[in-house]
Amino acid sequence: MTTSTTGTAGTSGFKPVLWTPGDWNAFFGFGTNILVNMLVLTGLLRFVLKMPDTLVFGRILPALGLMMCLSTFYYAWLAYRLAQKTGRSDVCALPSGVSVPHMFIVTFVIMLPIAIKTGDPMKAWSAGLVWVFFQSFILMIGGFIAPVIRRITPRAALLGTLAGVSEFLKSRRASVHTVLADPPGSGLYEYIRHGQIKITGSGSITEGIGIGRVTANMQGAPIDAAEHVEDAETVGYVYRLLREEGLFVSSTSGINVAGSVRIARQLGPGHTIVTVLCDTGAKYLSRLFNRDWLKQKGLLQSAWPDQPD
Image (tube, rainbow, N blue to C red; front, side, top):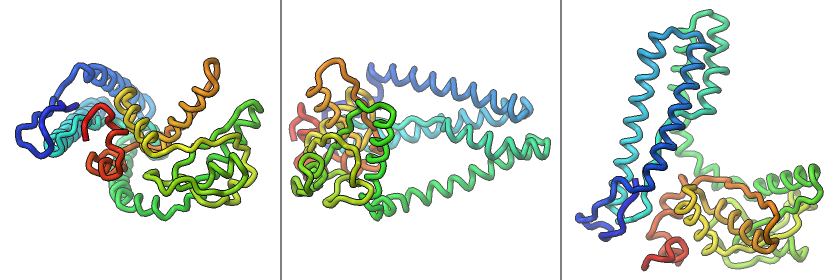
C-alpha cells in the first residue's frame, strides 16, 4: 500500500491511497512467490512426510491460507494507520508468507526423523506444531533482547567479516580489489589510505560500523582502498534503493552502495562491482525511516530531495 502526497501529518482529511499502478507488479510477484511456496510445501507434506490428503488439503493448507490473509490485511491496516497519522507518502505494508528456509528446516530436521522412527506422519505433524509453538516465544523474546545484543556487540568483532571475505576472494582471484566504506567518526579510512588512525568527522547515524582503532582481526587485512561516505550520501542511497529498486535496507547497506557507486564511476565501464546489502530497514523504522528524526538530523532533504522540509 502506498500513500498520496496530499494532506499534512496528523490531519483527519488525509486519505492514503490504497492502490497505485506499481502495486500490480508487487501483487503478481508476491502471488507467484506464494504459489510456488505452496506447491513445494504440498509436495513435502505428501511425498516426503507421507501425510494423508485429508490433513494436507483439509486442515494444513486452508489454515495457511487463512493465516496469510489475516496477517497481510493486518499489516495493511497498520500501514494505513501510520500513513494517516504521519501524512507520509513512503508507507507500505509488509507482505506475509511462508518462510522457505524454515519450511525445509522443520520438514527435514524436526518432522522427517520422527516420521521415519515412528512410521506415523501424525506424530511428526504434532512435533512440528510443538516446535512452531516454542519458536514463536523465541522470536518474541528475541524482539526484546536483539537491540540490546546489537548495542553491546563490539564493532571490532564485525571487522573480521571484512578481513575474512577479502582474504578469501583474493585467494580465488588475485585481481580482486577490496574497498572499505567508512562513516564519519571512524578512523579506518585514514588507516587504509595513509597507514595511521585519524578520525574523520564527528559521528554518524550508522550503527555497528566504524571504529577509532585498529584491532587484531583488522591488522594486515588485504584491503586495497577506502571511501569516506557522509551520512547525507548514505541516507540518499537508502531511500533511492527503496523508491527505485523496492529494497528496504538499513544505513549499513546504504553506505556500501554509496561506496560501490563511487568505485564504479572511478573505474568506468567494463568492471564488475559487488557489494553486500547486509541488513534490512525493519529495525530502524523509528529512526532512519522517521521523518521527524531525519529532519532533526538535517537529513530529510537527502532522503526526499524533491519534497520541502
